[in-house]
Figure 1 (cartoon, rainbow, N blue to C red):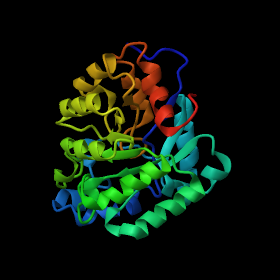
Figure 2: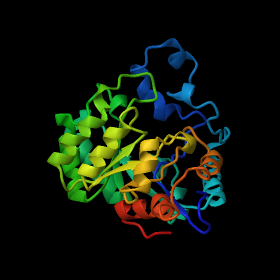
Figure 3: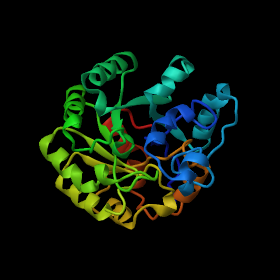
Figure 4: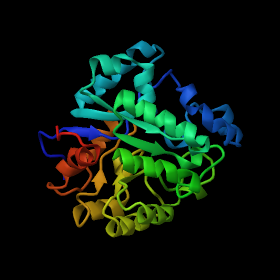
Length: 292
């Protein structure tokens, strides 16, 4: 059913590029990629999957304004963005603190230095979440690897949700470190940790649903998926027992435009009562934000 009128969204996956092709953000993947197309032709690591990547132009001084304009057009009240974006663009905190909240990506290979770094960012920016892309780490560390446990403990201490990429990664790099089944150990060992799946969980979306039924603090976000590709198992779960577990996330400006996302959302067959929770209510709960 179409989105009911008057709803505003919290987008739990937005980024503001640091340059036209975001080379600094994506540079870390180069050491993992081996195929010539990825290395020589792609400006974005999973470019074969995203044929119409948003282009904000070559003047990075306009990027914050362009992102806000897109958010306003589609009634996105608040966006969760990387803390690095706020560091790159000080006007985000200075002028737009009501529109953006921050998450920090962790590198488990850096151990206690990384713990101290995350604490420092949290003290300065008031983080609302932590995140980790296991397949993109170098060397790769699985989401249930021993190196990750101090970061899960830190998230529990700081009462922050943890956003984890799960499923086959888009970039042409190995997937073993982020199989959905690995969440079982994490959610078992850290029952007070809030975990949010990112980037689809495919082809294990049925496993994702089973684990959400099993663990009350496990959620699923729709990041990096155009709405017409939302897995049927996730839509069915949202419409039955999982209305409180499915969270809206886009992928602007990394791979999808908000124009495309919100046009395709109109055809997603969520029940009327699911939409408010999906677009903002569930995100507000885990991020400790007011519902817009």
